[in-house]
Amino acid sequence: MGDAATGAIAKPRLGGILGILFWIAVLIVTAVVCIGVANIYLGGIAGLVWGVRDMVSRAIAAESTADLALRVVLIPMTLLFIWAACMVAFTLARSRMGPAIISAAFALWVLGTTFASRTVYAGSGDFLIELVGLLPRLVTDAIIILAFAGYMFDGARPKRIYGAGAS
Image (tube, rainbow, N blue to C red):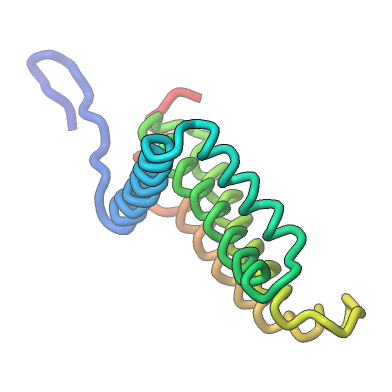
């Protein structure tokens, strides 16, 4: 695994499912950065700040159907960006904390998407009744999150990639 002449140890290569996830995360981060740069170019930094502030306030207030749709899209997309940024940063750093933080960001994204979509059909006013309606989705989310975390903690490739970094 290393170069016998120099005594150097080669870093494990990124590939397989972990490599695919990493490159998807790179594309997501790149797209968000490009959109941000384009907005700064077109409207300046103040235009970007004003636009983000306007979107967030409209999504929180949700006074119209369009604002409600913005909330349903904005929350999952923001959480997806957070997951992607964590995936890229901790994979490039090969940090031992990578699997834990990437899995937590993934769980936040999955659960955030579920509860953001809940706002579309919420209306009875009784959170417990609405939660019962969400139970099948929450069980599915739990399975997805546990499968992802299991791979990140116990998979051979993540162990090689993230076990090689400094803690």
